[in-house]
Length: 537
Image (cartoon, rainbow, N blue to C red):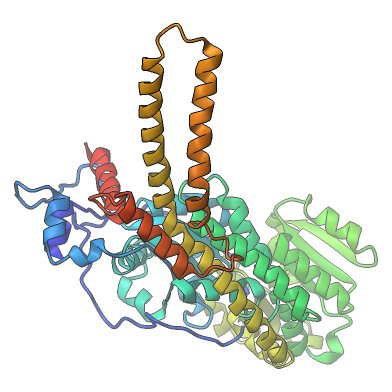
């Protein structure tokens, strides 16, 4: 490893100037493939940023050979034979507690920046970020699985200040087909806390919308997420898994109803802090359950007005954020659903509030569905307060899950079909370099022979005849290439198997000597290294 890193001069943004990551601790969940069926919003701290220090020293091994030549002749030759892989490095509500997840939360506005930083890593070619209240999942196309995972995990550690050893205890890793299957399950709502919920599909769509035009959100990753959207729609249409399903917001309301005395439901004083997507859903579910007066605290009133238009039978009272504590003092149940990176309620603040009404047993209820959390964990130490967060919703959704297991099994059949189709499309991309090289080979011959022909016909040849000859040469080449090109392409719906297409590719490479001395993967690694070195000069 030392030899490989020195040879390539690969650097990391940590205090060490060489991208050498020693194996520490146990590699928990590195090949986890879970099939349990079971949502998700949160904030990103890109400080310190994952960048190469401008004045850092590059250590390189003295040698008369180039880095790539050393690489070819070293024990790392095996690495150059690798093909790129789709990998997901993730933490979710099953494997990681909210205390860890909230530190890794990445707000949507910073997803493009995150993609850029990930793709600046030496072995990451493409990337996407899916960050919700119940998960952070980093999808990448890695030029090397092992090194790519190391780099992504180090990056996650840097943005969150969570030690790598701790991340390894909670992360899960999936590769290629398993990574594809996992995202399809996520978009279908099968991996959600609330089985079949629909909000996650909207969040997957947002990944695609945010990634459009962002360097690094390229063909394979964008294709994967677009296909995931198709799968999510198909599953919901063909299985009705979302019929009657609850969301995180409705589960939060249901939890509040379980915790509040039944006799208080009609008169409980309700406060909702935040009028974004989650807050709006909470308000709607409260209204659906008979709550007719709700105080809403938000930074501005503009998001509250449209909700009021929809819920004409409900008295919505808007209050600015500056009056939050005053409103909290007059509330029995408080829902927090904001994207704030700082606590809204500390232990000292809550301790100063007057006791809740006797009709609710003198216990003030906080339902915090924000990630990062809006209510400090130590608030629950107070005697007259009950605090619940997104991880506490499991008791509400357990029964809901049982009703959907049969539909989930039907959904798995659909997902298996779609995984095969996507994998066929992805694998067929291996033929793209051959298609390009074959066309370039034919074009070189065409241009050379055309030049010879025109030179023999003299300089006085009319332009229209030159154009006719030029067009004829293009036509001949295109017609000759049509057959081979058709046998190198596959869209996943083709009757020909992938093996046949790859055999055609290898045959054409041999026949026309299209194989280059340096593999495509080596070219990509070299480009990464050269880019890194330019940035340091």
